[in-house]
Image (cartoon, rainbow over all chains, first blue to last red):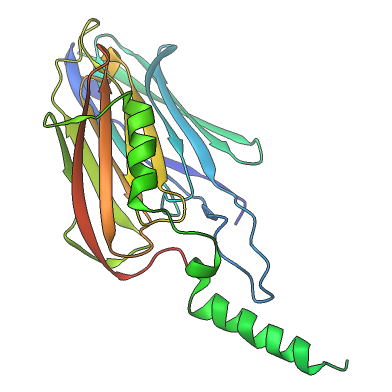
Length: 108
Length: 150
């Protein structure tokens, strides 16, 4: 399963200064590097090791992940929205692949 | 293909390891003291209790996906905010599960994710504030089926 596709939930609108909840779900195997195949060889680690979220170019939230995170990593966090703009999300794979996504929010 | 007795033995052991005890064969399991050391290094001293609340289920039927969330009491202003939070599991082969970085733009220092737990063990969070102080919370999770083996 090499294809990775993120699902993101951000409210479409918010009041100025409101703290909104953001939910993201990334489809990824998150192979921990602890398992062995049937010949006893260790299956190499392949995980999303970093996730970041920024709003209008400023960092909001970031995390470094290890093999102890479940497959299809789910991340729920908050952001304080003071102006209309765009959230940018990035998932970094062990193999260097970066998957990005964007979501706009409007301040009423 | 002719198999020697030795090879047959090795294969069957390998299969058993994969099926039953993949985790234990995967390497040394972390000891709680190791986590304590990691925690002290991160916090730069002994973290205090309070201000951070960890939410995990008491019993996890499936160690492959255990919901975990935490919330830190903080005004999250430019001068006083939570800079980072570490999440540890003291019975996992890799005790560090994740580290979270917050900014005042996070609004709140809260996060929810799903983690793997190899066996019944303690889940530990440590929050580091922008002023350098640190706080911790620990909860035990009973795991019915471990989440690291084959």
